[in-house]
Amino acid sequence: MANDADPMDAIRKAIGDLETRFDDMAKAVFGTDAFARATGTATEIGVKAQKQMADQMSRNLEFFNMPSREDVTAIGERLMTIDERLIRIEAAIEKLVPPDPGPATGPKRTRKPPARKAGSAKPK
Amino acid sequence: MSEAKEAQPKNDAGSAIRTLVERTIQRNIKGVEYFASAAPPVGLTPKDTIHKRGTLNLYHYKPLVDEVYRVPILMVMATTNRGYVFDVAEEHSFVRFLLNAGYDVFVMDWDYPRPEEKTLSLDDYASRFFDECIRKVQRATGEEEVSLMGYCMGGVLSTIYAASHPEAPIRNLACFTTPIDFSEMTIFSHMAQPEYFDVDRLVDNVGNVSPELLQASFDMLRPSGRAASNRMLWDNMWNDEFVEFHRKMDRWANDMLPLAGEYFRDTIKKLMWDNQLLKGTLEVDGRVADLANIKVPVFHGVAQHDHIVPYEASRHLIAKVGSEDKEELVMKGGHISLIAGANAVRRLWPALDAWFAERSV
Image 1: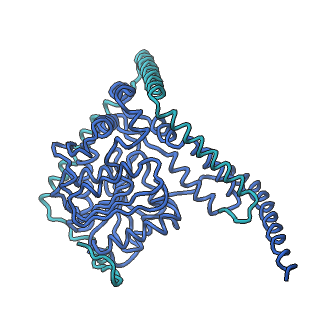
Image 2: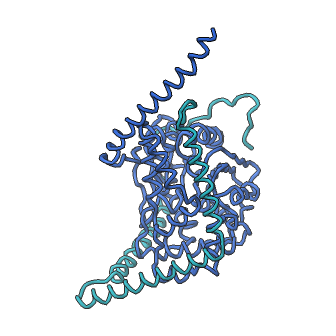
């Protein structure tokens, strides 16, 4: 989008250079062992906090005699098992039934590539 | 004569200042419109969902021409993002381009994995899902052979499937920005090392891995990325076409998906830590994924300025596959602009059409 005669071009270029330098500097920091260790620790703390909150919420829901996330997930898992079983049954039936010759209303599958230009590579 | 020469720079400077003022006014007017308007729609090319199983969706796009190539194309989206990047806008739709060029197009796309899907592993993603989808494509088209086309992690999954299922009815394999050597994934690889990152504790406690964690990891690869993107948006706010495309791509980039827990654990341990795909020791569903097993024609599109998957990580695909008919195309652009946007329309798409056309009859 840059215009050759645009007086803002110099500013754009300067900001672009600044961003590149910032990225290089930040990546140098992110690539250090200390940063990786600190990020790992922060992730672990976050996970622990999330787990504690989830456990507390689960206890609260149990107290109010309401289904917890685990209960809903358990139902979901059972549905997933049924889903998988249906897919296996469907696959077994498909093996017994001959494949569909294709939709009668669909396009013809006879398209040919355009003529190759002289000197262009031919597929092996 | 000399007067005319002197007058020219003055006119140029005057016109430049006029343009600058006009654009500044337009920026302010359109900037207000920007915040007041709804997000532009994406993924509008007509399609049918022919298979759905939890996180997995298989779309069949409605043909736009009367005669198509015999072999259908099954596109595989990266598991971290939505597949509408292939169909982001009518004039920038990879899917629409392929449909108009005469291909029968299917897309494997992903939804949020449900909490119970935390048990889905690399075996599911790189083997069982492919078996299911290929079977569905065969039934929908009546054709035995299918061409696979994978982007980023979708390319990794397609490659693993082709390498571990040499008997599968794959006619062609096309990948874009597909990492093979995960030790070259710079910051990702470094921060995921076992001494810093306890993947077991994370997955055991949270189940599916949140998109925020993944987004933060991507942001670290280009820390100024968001600021630069907003700066470019403001700079081009006068340009409706730029703003619309920017909004669509920005929506896509921020619309990240969580990853199924076991799949994430497998990716970290088998690919990041042990680099098993490069070493040829990766096993999925009890089969070894040896790249030398791939004998079908292979196309690999890589971007010169890819900050997510550097060339050092992706260059091994062509070197290691056992195919005689293989081609790597290094193109200008970055990880996303390789497949979407003006750059892709000019470079990758026509090259890919030329490659596929002769191999899809």
